[in-house]
Amino acid sequence: MQKASQGINLQVNISNKQILGIALPITAAIIVPQINFITNNIFLGGLGQGALALAGITGVYYLIFAVVGHGLNNGLQALISRRAGENRIDAIGNLFSQGIRIALVFAAIGIAITWLVAPKVLSWSLHDPESVRTCVRFLNIRILGLPFLYVYQMRNALLVGTNQSKYLIIGTAIEALTNIFFDYGLIYGKFGMPQMGFDGAAYASIISEFAGLAVIFIVIRLNGVSKQLHLFKNWTYDAANAKLIVVQSYPLILQFVISIMSWEFFYILIEHHGQQALAISNTMRNIFGFFGCFTWAFAATANTMVSNVIGQNLQEQVPRLINRIMFWSLGFASLVCLFLNLFPHAFLSIYGQGEDFITAAIPVLRIVSSALLFMSISVVWMNAVTGTGNSKMNLLSEFAAITLYCIYVYTVLEKMNLPLVWGWASEWIYWTTIFIPSFWYIRSGRWKNRKI
Image 1 (cartoon, rainbow, N blue to C red):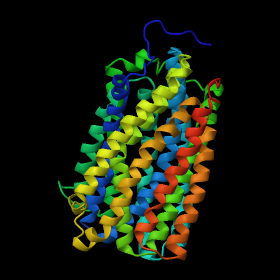
Image 2 (cartoon, rainbow, N blue to C red):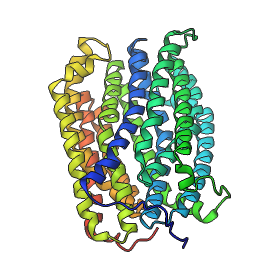
Image 3 (cartoon, helix red, strand yellow):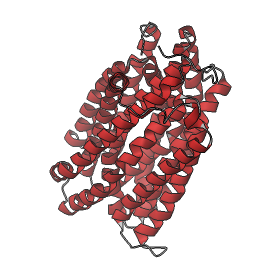
Image 4 (cartoon, rainbow, N blue to C red):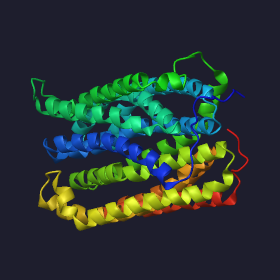
């Protein structure tokens, strides 16, 4: 075992102040990319409902590859948090460098799949040939941002895992401002830029991801974080740590990919119900993305704090810690649910699609907002399981939830041809199924002697 660093202590306590100190900066950092996504949709909405509908398909496709990085991020974060809890600072830099190597390999694979396979998959799935051409052209551009996104996510794992989430805000703020500027410029041809329409959103996203990544690495270097954590001390390939990251992350990667692929399946079924149904569903994804940021921040907090506390050999405090985090997550989700149900018209009007769109979307919004409450509880327990080191348990929970989810949406949307609101009720089934095995596993205590 590597010796502990004597100059720094990254161990956490389970106080509410510590929880919020980690979670709130993560919330801000997660919200900014969602603002980017919503900004894209608002600007693309100006090109017509067709562009907004296609943004849903391309957005979910890119999200499939984005969650591969998210799986790596969660696995690496749990490992870094465990080393922080053990106060083994020297091990953190090496874990980070191996994570970067693995992420770049995955990015190259994602680009190759998109260029070679995606055109065939989309041509089989979508009914309109012009929509297929537009989506393929967009994705061939957009996927080039994948290496920047993956390295960005590894940086998130490092900062959250070492309780320095405050630095996340800087990079994501730069990313948001850059994205808004280039979205407006490249989609509509403003500020002397070429008018690229739908493709302009792809270029804007790539530029903003690179800008955010560059800025945050400058910031952590200037603030001494890179030196403190030995980030650039040794970039030599370490087979043992690389294997540890892959073993910890691959069930999470599969979990997230299966989840998003099922969402793509859902969107394909929605496309069969018409353009308005697809556009409404895209705005519902915005709700999960933007307003779910609080929930996902507390989920990331559960991952890192549970792993850190176990690293301190304080396993008996884990259930109390999870309950405290869940309380905060549910509280924020309840406020969001209340806001959306009191002011649905105000929220939906920002997309500029008219009264018919808003009238059709409000019943769906009420279902989705209530599902946020289920989600706020489930993701905290699910990520607590990640923090224990048993990521395979997450994969089993996901498999059960997705099986029920896909059977349900196919039956109600394709076979029974029920209205859109019935399709979105699937979120209740999904999050309930995620919660049950996660809650059982933590309560069973089977994780207490697990080493990672």
